[in-house]
Image (tube, rainbow, N blue to C red; front, side, top):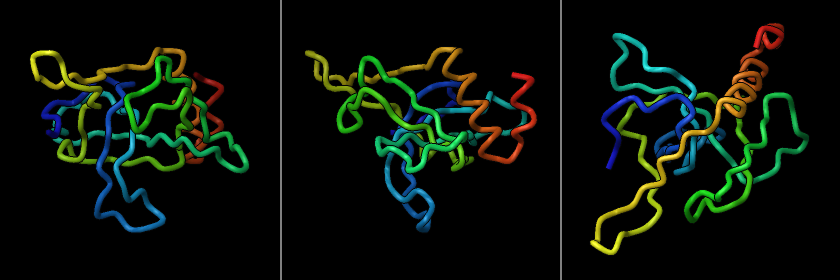
Length: 140
């Protein structure tokens, strides 16, 4: 079920990119929320995707995020690459909490993870590289 609220900056969610056109993202994948909640901008959230494939070559707009403990399957790798060159503003309808299993009572359990401030700062610096604002990284 899609989310109905703006998640905290740094939250890891799953985004359904179905309907986009290659070379855009075109499948479900984990993302990090990079936008804060903005007034008068309901129903939209800005995210950057995560990938388990190492970039070749690694660029300043890539950031290796260690996910310990690992995210739930099928994203259960110890690290992911944040692809800040692929920024998306998407509808809440595309965003889902990451399911981590079922409780003994039969209810879904969700991994509601927010990355720490140090990782978020590194992602923001990589994001500036990804959108061509490298000169602003000195101010982070």
